[in-house]
Image 1 (tube, helix red, strand yellow):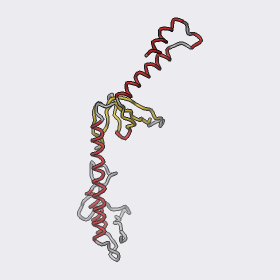
Image 2 (cartoon, rainbow, N blue to C red):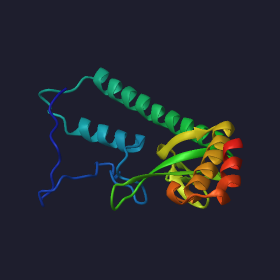
Image 3 (cartoon, rainbow, N blue to C red):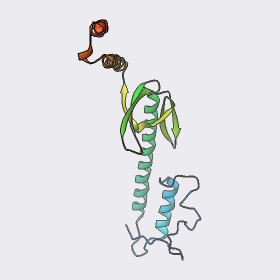
Image 4 (cartoon, rainbow, N blue to C red):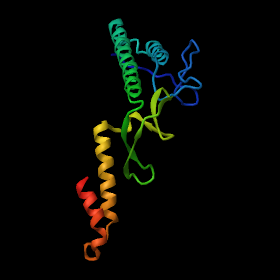
Length: 182
């Protein structure tokens, strides 16, 4: 590809407007992503400011645009897959991996996905009125696992409620027998 001569204003800053007046920065848009309008504006600016001694051929321009279009369509498809995936989780029990912003500590939140909301074009899972990004999904829980976990939690709580073995007497015999027979 030929050299690109960037247009620089009198103040020494890179000019972000083409001669057609199209701005590279759009009001109200997230400037961290490149959309097709911005790409075409950059392509036109590149064409207008290329080194005339080493011009870029048309095949390279078309190749760049085709590559950009493919990437853009793949991103759209990934967003659609995320939305389908999120919709499939409504009513299902999930485990979310939650990382504390202040300490970096990782904890897990288990609950049923109540509904999905869209924020910045991304699906957000809502569990017990708390919002979680789909990227924080750790596991989808089966009904069998959930029931077994409830039984284990109850069993562990009952065992913890028993006194130390040194202090156990016959009054705990019925409790221990019930736990054993479950």
